[in-house]
Length: 430
Image (cartoon, rainbow, N blue to C red; front, top):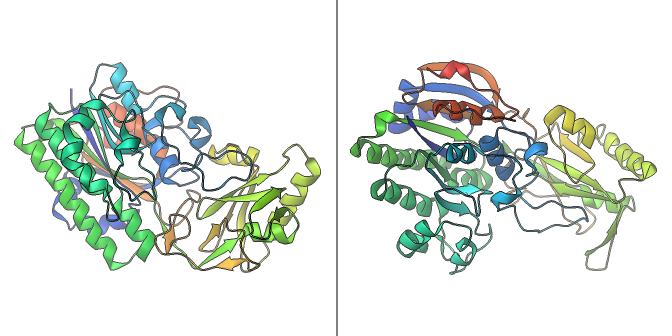
């Protein structure tokens, strides 16, 4: 039975492929394998939502990871992120593989803490943590075999102000491939391209520098497989989770709600109560109504949002209630409206001041120089390419959905996934 190794690059754009063809390792894969040119992310195109859909083959409303953050009602911000696998509804590709007796390994994959995988090192240390004791989040959520064998060697990479999850992930990946029999299914997730784009923009020259680094990382994995005589028996997959879009301005919808009397704050702009609240996803926003059982309030908030379609500075081109978003995008959760602009603007959550606008913040994961989190109809989507014994040499033009990836990768292993929203991309399989 062939094996599967997935190399995921956060914020990989479909437009990156032409440059990747010129690099030694990505180019080698693209010349001998299959390319699905455009993969549409799920809505919202946030990292944790997309990574969960990649593995489950289901939309957000089904797997229930609605946001990077643990979104609940109550106008709450700065809440913990989704981290634990138990919060995912439905089986992942690795669960299905495990059920069939295959060995599984997941490195730095979001929402995988405590997963029943043979080897697991989840992406679970908080986004903003720069201290020196990251192991307190890993104990009980990572598998003991990886913590005991490798943390003393490589834990230094995720400590301190210059922590690097990618260095940590690659060190683990190469050691595992050297020290153990190759897992039947292995996930390796890289983060740094996303950070570069949030900081500098989608097309900045630094993105090519980062893609070269990712090419070298992939090359190290390929060489490791070649040295062990396993390369020809391995289906290699490179995929992204979402694209990004360069941002011009940041619109503060919560300040507008304050102006309408729908949000009350104290003198220090701390939230006291609300009738409408904006939860930013970056390029889009999920709007929570204080009392969703009040038809008059729902209508009032809906009218305010509809009027923003006509505002030349905002130009909302998408205003949907939760029933419409579920029907159109498979998106439901603890919110009442979904909005997105036709313009390259992000949505902020700030309650400060009176201005409806603020500047983009380089590096910020919601309101950076570039961002994501919108609908699958944004101009920059992601991509998928693969090579190996189960994959033919072809190019699939046009768009396919992210929820098609899990059933496709399952079929590479001779497996099938049930209760999924996607279908296998048959054109790329032998």
